[in-house]
Length: 396
Image 1: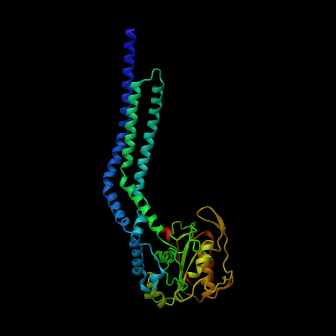
Image 2: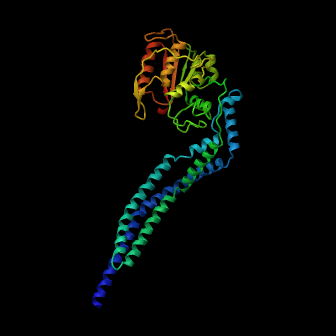
């Protein structure tokens, strides 16, 4: 019996030694990866903390201070006359929005942490199965349970350490998101003044921002840019395209031609140009088109009528895989309005060969195949001597 007991004790000791070796090997296997993550966190911590400090300062502003910032920004961008009709986001809110998402660097770090946690989880699953076997043994292998439990605890600790490394980033994201929500909850719907018009909108990203500033905080159910249909318009889900078209009346002197592309409002009036803008895709075009002004005092939709059928559109697939007719797209409507209302091209086959102006079309999104055909083929055929420039924001 004594010999048997000694053999059992030796087997148990050997088993425990193996389990200790396995537990130590688990930790050792993940030590280099954990060390790498710690090194990255040390290198980036200063940047993370700087971003967090910026967010803390912005988040500390009251709603009243943020609203006042927004009005000051409108004055700075647009001047006394136009500021009452344009509502840019307060700069501090813009910062909070920018900081409410991870940078590419931070996203890459998070991916590495997730991959590390996945590998550790696989090791934990194997050791947990061994732990369950040790508990189920008769009698339970208490010593083995203790060793395996300690090993599992070390693995859990390693994952916790890794996930805590970017704590400043996660704090920044949470603080930004909550503060943005509180500010937006303090905003109410504003009505567009009957006389409000967008004029001299440059065919640039700045012009696009001006359009957003014009409609910010308006009723989202009336002026819809996406899938949000109630409350103030915050552009949190911009699904629909916005396009801006600028057309000069004829060849410009070199100096005026240069000014017409620099985003300056007054140069367009001096050059005698027409600037039109429109939103697209279903209801947005019909509902807000009338408010996109032209610098000569005309606006798409002012007459309340439809333009003559001039160009041929067809069904095309959008970015979500949906296929529909493109006669409501911004680019289609802008090209049609320019020709029928300003250049005397009112029926299929009509040509205006005397027009030698420059047409600039800026679109937030890439043109669909239907609109590309309208702009690059049908519009060019109708205005053979025009100079055409197409800019797409999403292409950089």
